[in-house]
View 1 (cartoon, rainbow, N blue to C red):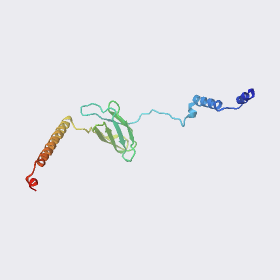
View 2 (tube, rainbow, N blue to C red):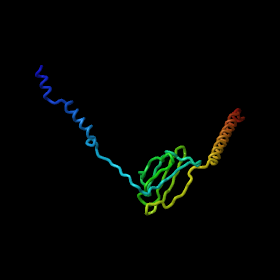
View 3 (cartoon, rainbow, N blue to C red):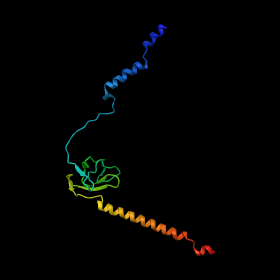
View 4 (cartoon, helix red, strand yellow):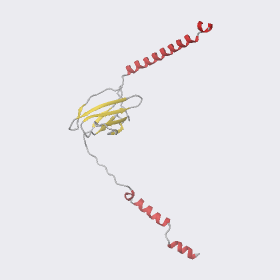
Length: 171
């Protein structure tokens, strides 16, 4: 039996190979990664779009989609506004850029940003996208009265057809 144990010690086992290999990978993570990454901070001219509701509250964390003048199936940039309703992007060509900001529940802003050949904003307008509070109230009353009229008409239709008709009784 002593010979068996000595022979076990002399040949390598999977744990004797695997443990040093794993220790080496943990000690040098750059060897285990697929490729390196780096970052660079620069200052460029960016287009800043600010979105807010009609009461002045910012459209915080709303979804944003920026489409380049060439269009295409893939957006130039997507993301969310910050807590102040701001979103920035850097155009890489001249033309009309489409910015769509979706604050959900029907609050949607679609803006067109015109950028000139020096990649600066040529046209800057404040455009309202949502109806005012009074327009919302008027639409609400219209829906309520429309539904009430529909229900009244349906009830009258049922009453007319529910009463016995003389032709049907004699037939």
